[in-house]
Length: 393
Ligand code: FAD
Image (cartoon, rainbow, N blue to C red; front, side, top):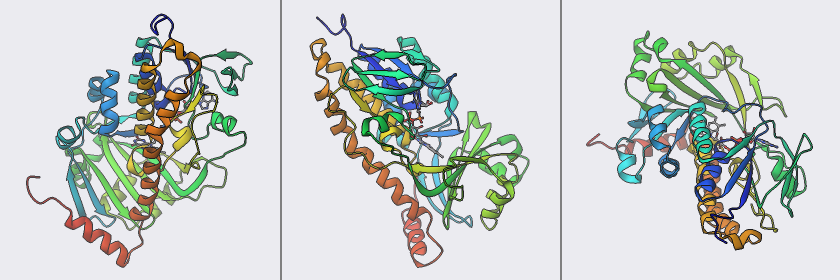
């Protein structure tokens, strides 16, 4: 019997960016997809997100890139500055990314990105069940049991339930809480119209650029969002949240003190903030495998390779996971219903080394970005200055 007549029933845990990517790709491969999402409403927390070309290319295959592009700001360049404001490096991004990688680099509000993926998944016929918190898995059946007691059976269960993955714990058979990285993030949005009232800040709103400032133990990343109406600010600092507390309302005076001797533009930006939160940045240990020996369960996204966000690749890797896994499932025939292990093993072989490199690369950037003033930092800055293109840009 053909796959079309007898598709697999695939159950995905989590309707985050990774779960939705997997749902779209799996549905495009002709299978039935249900997502169990614990939240009572669909959405994304946080502010802006960077979509690098490796992710954008997959979004094109999903048929959503044009819509995402309409909702995005495309940066022309990225600029790296010292925390005192000296420009160290500037690299082109537009049209460089499209010419070099075949897809653009985009900045979008997370809620917009998520909404586009939900819309596409729904159009394709993906069922999304809300208030569906998975708290048990039978890896043999396979099936998941919800907090309500309801049990859902499928041919394949894909866990995309994020950093604090319950599915990962059930798969490992023991608690596996994420570990602290030593850093936290403030995520802030300010109105570009407020920035335009100040000549120093107005310049930051005139031209879409990713601005980095690198300083001792901290860094800042800022870019325009929403047609240039909003300015997204991510500030990374040493983690001083109490153990076990993932998020807290920020003390604005404490925040201003942390950046008191930084570039005056950053200090002025902080003066525009009314309220913000700070989030502990956490990783998980690398897993030996993402695939259950039954061949009926696999993990993806933050559930199996959470990363520091310093390469802006966490969601991008989750989208890649979803695209690859869904794509591989297009080669599975109905006869393989009880033999999905080769496809899942291929998924892991194609993906795991890459995501490990991303996690390690992001962790390495923590030291490179946050150097204390001194000879090593001066050498870093010298290299950045020498690498700066001088012509044609
Ligand atoms: P999540 O987004 O965590 O989604 C998991 C989903 O599963 C949620 O909807 C949750 O409600 C649901 N769920 C959880 N448990 C259960 C359960 N038991 N049953 C049912 N549902 C459940 N990445 C980029 O690519 N670019 C960036 O610019 C970028 N910037 C970042 C900046 C910061 C400050 C941070 C912290 C991260 C950043 N990232 C970025 C990383 C990115 O946000 C994550 O990697 C990405 O959102 C992970 O997606 P996910 O779908 O794997 O997990």
